[in-house]
Length: 192
Image (cartoon, rainbow, N blue to C red; front, side, top):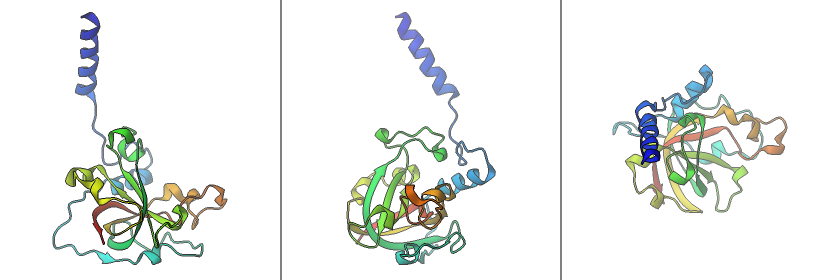
């Protein structure tokens, strides 16, 4: 009984004093805080908002190029491609390190390519956020490997990944993505 009471007290203490994760996550620099605010943007879009069509081939080019200034963070866009793979993610700075992949309470990282079975390095990253999951409880039914989809959401330049992106890496041995541009957060997914 004594151990039970101690456990209850510890649990209630954690629940009472647990702080929610702010939109800026747990980052400490102004640039990274701003990035997390963009990553944690809402997914409810005004019915009067019209996304700009952005062909996927404009984001995924065959040649290395500096692309940081080609687009604007926060631009509302729609593109089409093949959903190559997807994975529930765990702790990240944007969720204060609190998410667990097994609980499915973090982002879902998805790779969008120009053709079926594209290599991840020839894809862009698009991300479903917890806000999308709350709005679309059936989000997993929208996902499938090598299916053609339309993705709507907000452009984001995730500068944290410059060393891992072909377009920005200097020593590209660890590169696993084509560009730092993402659609994050995704606001809509439609299977085509």
